[in-house]
Length: 186
Picture 1 (spheres, rainbow, N blue to C red):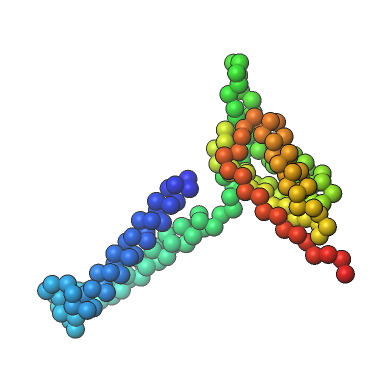
Picture 2: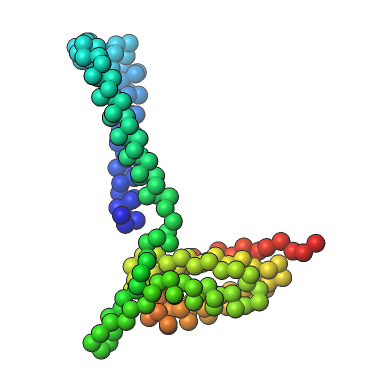
């Protein structure tokens, strides 16, 4: 699923939960017309039918609850998956002349990580590509040495991203850089 589909799905789930809560809240205070706040929410007839078919209604409620729990679990797994799984395989770009250029996404990621660690102030770098190949989102995390100059590292990261854009033939749509400074030596 795309990010927009996830946002739409979670918005619908949230609206359904809020609407259900609002109806139950209004019913408990007797705000809804024709509903007694002291009476059962379903009424006497549906309650007696529920009790009449007792072993099967309990089983149906248990199965419905299990399906709802599995659906919620799957939604949570989709939401918490790593963004690195979005772009795998190859990035394909149409050329100015007939033909296409195909680049392995893992090769680009490793090349950018290697380029970023070329600065002596950068201990380690992690890069994740997400989104559509022509304008991917680039997520960078660099671990710095305690004595690394911030301005120098910032310029090094900019230059590495420019080289990446030139090499890959695609300008990042979104660039997110996180820098962490490691502890100094005692």
